Length: 158
Image (cartoon, rainbow, N blue to C red; front, side, top):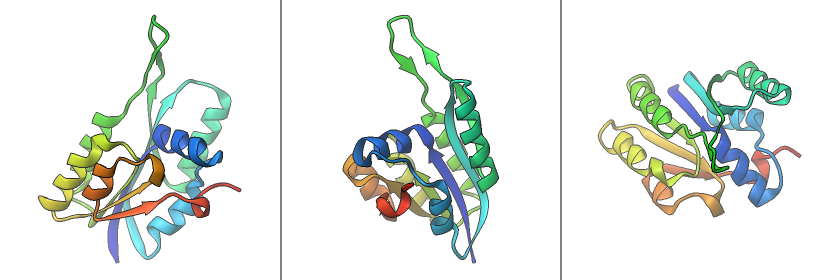
């Protein structure tokens, strides 16, 4: 049985699934698929906290599935733009948990993670599985992964 660590870029998967399919990602279906026959050593979902009740309910669902939920506050800049990015936090955690797991799973289409995936795969000898919406996942990340699993209708809420 392989040990697996899971890292979910919640904002990325939310917006790419909504934009492409008009539906939400099904975390229960994903968990079943990603963990089948494997032991989970760590599972973290990274999200932005706007403080609303519906969002807190969603975060509690993630916790019930088995995720640790890490939150950053939503920052609205004076020019109207927003800031809320977990790239550095995800990278640090992936590097830390690469010691404990055989398989590293990243749920994101963000090309900023391509170098991380290469490093974990090539230097740490880990299998790197990337789940992302194919049309919106950076080619560099797909190529850096040991395996790319496209998010499709089978991983979406009905």
